[in-house]
Amino acid sequence: MAAPRDGLEAVEAEGSAGLQGTSGIEVVLPLGPAVSAPLCPHGPTLLFVKVTQGKEETRRFYACSACRDRKDCNFFQWEDEKLSGARLAAREAHNRRCQPPLSRRQCVERYLKFIELPLTQRKFCQRCQQLLLPDDWGQHSEHQVLGDVSVTQLRKPSQLLYPLENKKTNAQYLFADRSCQFLVDLLSTLEFRRVLCVGTPRLHELIRLTASADKNSNIKSLLLDIDFRYSQFYMEDSFCHYNMFNHHFFDGKTALEVCRAFLQEDKGEGVIMVTDPPFGGLVEPLAITFKKLIAMWKEGQSQDDRDKELPIFWIFPYFFESRICQFFPSLRMLDYQVDYDNHALYKHGKTGRKQSPVRIFTNIPLNKIILPTEEGYRFCSLCQRYVSLENQHCEHCNSCPSKDGRKWNHCFLCKKCVKPSWIHCSICNHCAVPDHSCQGPKDGCFICGELDHKRSTCPNIATSKRANKAVRKQKQRKSNKMKMETRKGQSMNLTSATRRKKRRERAHQYLCS
Ligand code: SAH
Ligand code: ZN
Ligand code: ZN
Ligand code: ZN
Ligand code: ZN
Image (tube, rainbow, N blue to C red):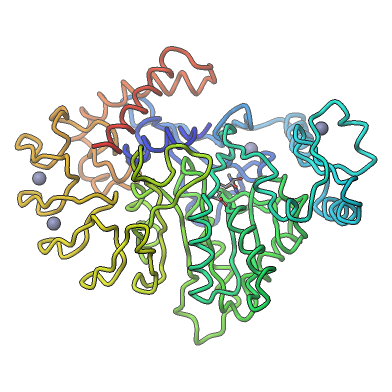
């Protein structure tokens, strides 16, 4: 519930709005040693702030870090709220009840029993998304059950399980084969021996399949994911039930140690972290989590490696570039377009829809990363990196400036390249879509209206408070009304429907302009 994070559609809009503004709810980053946040079933909650109408006053509250939908987790507590002992006890009981019915160990034991069964007795309940042992059959007799589950099927759980794409909490978008294979080939070319897969179950799976097919490859993978269903298919050393928005290991210290050992093996040599978080997720908590994983890796390093960085692939839409680079200045964006299986819009371009907006951000030198020429990439010798064919080098910008794969045009007034459909507006004094309405910030930072950051990180936060009050007031009057209604948890009423529509339109405009 913390932010408008319902799937890619809204997220496109968020990207276009710079991830903020639309809801007026922002995450508050912990300063110094964190006061311990109250716990929901998904681990420590996050502190959010609602920017309230006109006045500067704000009231902060805790909400679930992982769930964008109150139906999935309805935790809510004002920061200054004192709970009675009885309510605290009830909450603890609730948190316990919400934990998965089986421990990680029990899952592994079930799996070991399962693979001992003859093929004809290996069943999978599609309704419950669960491998069944003979004792369970009775309970699932009315359900749709798949029989003869082969070893090959067991090795591809991402195909056996249905993607949780309708669940706002998971927003599971699985890599298309081509993109997944590209990643695996790239990891092997770069000679990584261990891959920490954070929210990339299909990549994890393909790495393991590749390793078992090729005797020479000894590449290992550890999957961290909130999708508990995967614990049925992997041993404790290859899957941890994990929340990447608060670095919470559901199985406590044992699981944390699995992760630590994995990162620190060989003094941290040969390991990379690959992550593909839900795009609706807030960038800040993700960045905090990744910094914790990086720190864990660093602890295991020898002294002379102190300046090294943990290699990272962070897969995210290109319009988050400035947000990501704000937290990780060493990350650069690749032109490679990541495609997904179960997202109609984000399949390989060329035919039909526009191309995927999803990219790889990495701290590996870009000249080491070869993009496939047969898929429309070329090497730019001036930039020393592979770029999209249409991304032409601009001699004025001295770069291949396009972010979306199309040819951009240089504007001499803006002194930079802009999207092909944009024209220079003399009223706004910068380039914009032809039918934009001049004046005033629309979405984006409450203070200055820029689209690439939010109020809390606005460079003008101190200086321009008064100057921008009017603008902000106007903006907030509009958005406050909307967010109050959603906050109260009302289901799709007219206002939120309109808001959604607006968001979709903005997303559309952004991506198509
Ligand atoms: N493209 C990837 C999947 C990305 S979808 C692949 O094909 O491998 C996002 C993934 O992040 C899903 O697997 C989802 O279960 C996981 N996820 C969603 N929220 C999470 C959270 N809070 N913590 C950890 N993993 C999460
Ligand atoms: Zn929760
Ligand atoms: Zn069942
Ligand atoms: Zn240019
Ligand atoms: Zn211009």
